[in-house]
Length: 282
Image (tube, rainbow, N blue to C red):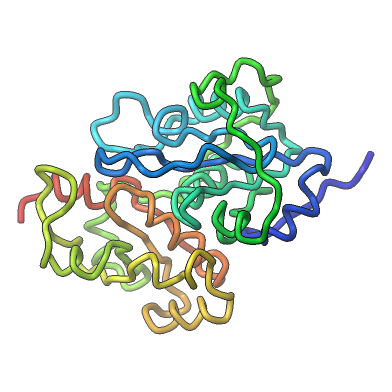
């Protein structure tokens, strides 16, 4: 039996190009096609053999009150098995923006007990820039029909330490062992612009501080481990558990990826400001 290749939380496009044909490698395109109702300019091409990791449907709780709500373990397991995820799979996730929704897919997989997963540094943009091969997207894949894939054997195991919920935020905001960090832009955090989601009030979670998610990036790529350690060392104490929030849990996951690389324990507040701003009064 061959030894399973173990990967870290981020891999380069050069690494993936070398290992693309390796046994047990699965590549997932986790691009979100719509943000605040406006269609993104999506590509008609993809990394060869990539499969669509549908965050908005298969990997979010159906009929939830708030967007991108974490699914049940049962739903996550079923959707994962439909994509042929096995316990010995090696998963690389990417998106078409750079590092954006791919971090959410990474976080979800980690949260449900799949650890051999990494985000593709720079995403599809970096892959194309380096001139690596692409192929046209499969029409069946674009229609989200996964029945042609062999069912995987992955069993989901929920990791509660990865997730923060609304009910715990009051205590967390008063606990010096925690630091809440908001990934929204400075303007949104400072309430100088309206929230892009219609009907959602502006505001901040008590005791939270601001770190726009793009501050952990160099262009499309994640900053180096040393650079990330400097970023977080300037915001939090080494012993603190970091809790990340944003608008609806997507860019908070980018900060979770960065903090994990930097060596900080962390969680994502799944409901983020969409939930908090809705359930509280200014």
